[in-house]
Amino acid sequence: MRSRNPNENKVTLLWFRHGLRLHDNPALLEALRCSKEFYAVFIFDGESAGTRVIGHNRLKFLLESLSDINSQLQSHGGKLYLLNGKPFEIFKTLKEEVGLQKICFEQDCEPIWKERDDSVKDLCQEIGIECVEEVSHTLWDPRVVIETNGGIPPLTYQMFLHTVAAIGPPPRPVQDADWTGVNFGILPKKVVDKFEAFTSVPSPEEFGLVDNTKSKGPKVRWIGGESNALKNLSFRLEVENNAFCNGIYLPNQVNPDLIGPPTSQSAALSFGCLSVRKFYWAIHDLFNQVYGENLSNESITGQLIWREYFYTMSVDNPFYAEMKRNPICLDIPWHEDQENLESWKQGKTGYPFIDAAMRQLVQEGWVHHAARNAVAFFLTRGDLWISWEHGLAFFLYYLIDADWSVCAGNWMWVSSSAFEKLLDCSQCVSPVSYGRRLDPCGIYIKKYVPELSRFPIEYLHEPWKASLELQQSCGCIIGRDYPERIVDHNVASLRNRKYMEDICLSLMISPPKHCCPSDEEETRRFLMITQEDVDHIH
Image (tube, rainbow, N blue to C red; front, side):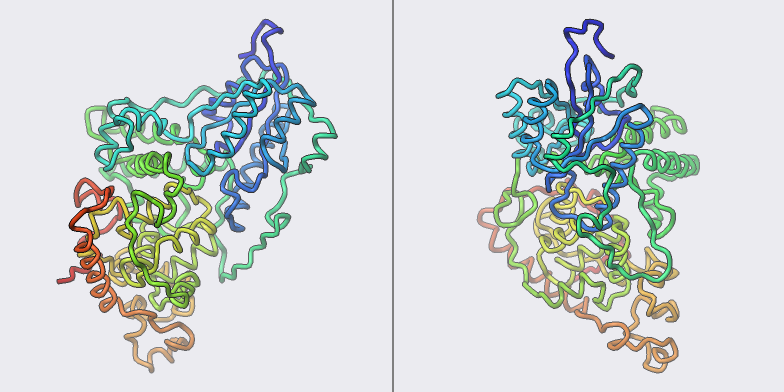
């Protein structure tokens, strides 16, 4: 709502980073409040929205999201300015050229954004620009969570739940913006030229990123943007409603759909095309409509709460995504094996389910959470004994939903480096049995590992067991057309357990401060594993 007193009105700017949406956007509402001239800006600074490390699929998703924002603003008579440069330099120039008085943006709570945001806040204080930061990328403000927990991050997920329970439910989404009477400013040509403003939303190729992936058959396309995210949310709520009515919670975890119509909201949440608060409350309101408000419903948004937990654990830890300097991460002596690492990256490990997941990741930029766990186990404590840091770097480049805190947190958990029971490797996920449970008919493997498509189902997950005659009849010779196993899982898992036991003994005198799950059931829920999926090694 704009002020009726023209003396109170200001030249305002909404700085998009994450939070690429118009709904539930308190920073937008604040920028429009008391605005006499409004600008919407996204800055390509080589950092924002994760653009420091980004592959073709994720950049395409980002650019589609920006295009959607621009289209919506155009429908209201404005536009989204896409500028190149350092934010503080751009804002300093806008102060000089258009009289900028107020900058609003959504909080990026991760420490990797601190230097960027501090430089802007310092500039604003120095030259007299009002700076407003709003919390809407997370359900709770991570700093409030830490303060409520006595000034330290909660060490366990259960402790986190107790802390946010003391804070209270997350806020409901804010109202939509009223665009009536908004006066969109026009940047002077001098500014447009100085910061190389794009005249239209660019393509990934203009940034030097070309899609070189080769796949047979159509690729699942994840389309960026708020408009598409809201359509997908409606479809997702239909799925959830049908599940609730049939007594099922978390339908895509009970029976993971690895290749079907995408119901995952992870990419939309990562870029902020979909408000996490809107998603959270939509699921809870739907649950309450079906069951009433007296039934416990904590688990139905469990993955969103884990997202919050990982954000909170990273907020004061700039070394969160590495091993050596990370205070919550165990310094495990992983192997350096470039050959096996490359086989894992290329989806050529000889384990069909692992290879299918890795190829899907590279081709499409997305993999179901259950399959991510499988490939992460395989790379780290399960089989190859290679550092999770290599896996994280690969995921951050290729995943369209790559999220620094969440991605690093997942990798530390699965590798037993943090959040896990201290070096407990008594259970290792089998890449064969786990794959059989998630892909019992082999549809997933046949799609992404087509060279095995003619193998009968009894050999599809273990093609090395097929006779040479059968391999010849299927047109795929193991070791020639599809690789031999780069490691024997049964041997490797025994070896890795011994490694873990030795490290554990060396730490017994003074165990490190180590985040851990509250109980074994919590671990199973997070990793989506059953008794059939694990190897018990004695």
